[in-house]
Image (cartoon, rainbow, N blue to C red; front, top):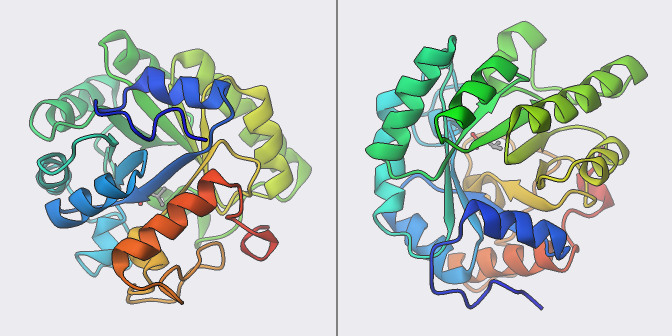
Length: 269
Ligand code: KIV
């Protein structure tokens, strides 16, 4: 039973924290425009992520690196114009948070012009997270596979398989929480590692390819609707299979997350 499903007000960062306390799983999908923003909102999706994955699924690039802050502000504003209840997180794109001051300038644009409620950034950027939080900007950290670092990593690979790497991800997760992050996305890490991190942290941990032990799940909308241009990642699922409509597919995802039925073993590492 959801504590927040019938909420008429827009969800806040404290509602997300309360969902973790109440052991209610948090559902999250990406959206980049008003139509999908409205659809996700009316199905009860808790968090809409305006992800820089838009560089791949909207703009057709082979990575998220070409996405600019102008792109992010534009798409965030489109989504926010249609949203009533869902909490909106927007990505700080590649190289837009090299210094705390850069991060503040760009995060402020996402909140002021885009109407986001929180910004997401990749890596354990403790200096930047602490500075943004001090300025009143809620931060979602993103650890594990960092798509903006694909050129350094050498591909989109599972992270944290060896013990030293796993320990580093755990240490980073504890550090971003201490720095003041209110949410953590863990991407493509072994399910056991992610479940341990979700247990140790008091902030909600949202997984993508990180197992069912996380406090919530996020997928790229176009992957779960099976309309992505590339191959669907192993951790995603085609929710259109057997669905009557796009809205039905999104509702099935939402229900499966709430019931801890997604992800299944076949979607995990
Ligand atoms: O940009 C995005 O869509 C993301 C998700 C993959 C978590 O960061």
